[in-house]
Amino acid sequence: QVQLIESGGGSVQPGGSLTLSCAASGLTFSWYAGAWFRQTPGKEREFVAAVSRNDITEYSGDSVKGRFTISRNNAKNTMYKQMDNQKPEDTAVYHCAVQHTTGISQNAKDYPYWGQGTQVTVSS
Image (tube, rainbow, N blue to C red; front, top):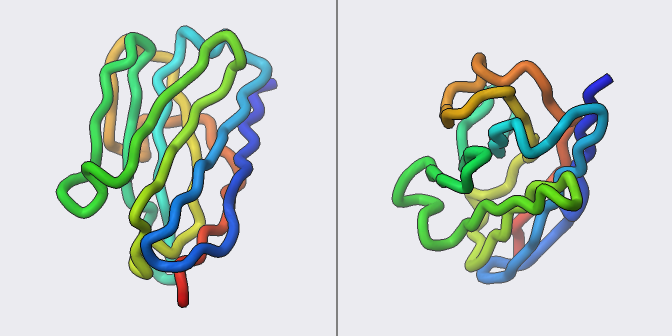
């Protein structure tokens, strides 16, 4: 049974940093592409960043590029997202997701496995 558990969320002041972790079990993690999405109340899940099993990365756009860094450690079955220079608009529940593919995707519907999410609040 595939299980994804996020950790590292919390409250941070604007300009601060957090690192989220996504620990995977029940799968051969190195065969999977991973991604982070975020969701705020009343809105659909929004793509943030993805990493292929070959460490190719994609980011959602200028709003996070340069501030967020996605990475993975296959030996630890874990994916990470470093978030720097955070802004209040980064406040959301962050979910990790994985799919068994050689490619990479920004579409939430392509990911069959999801974690339950971790809350990130950016506020002064």
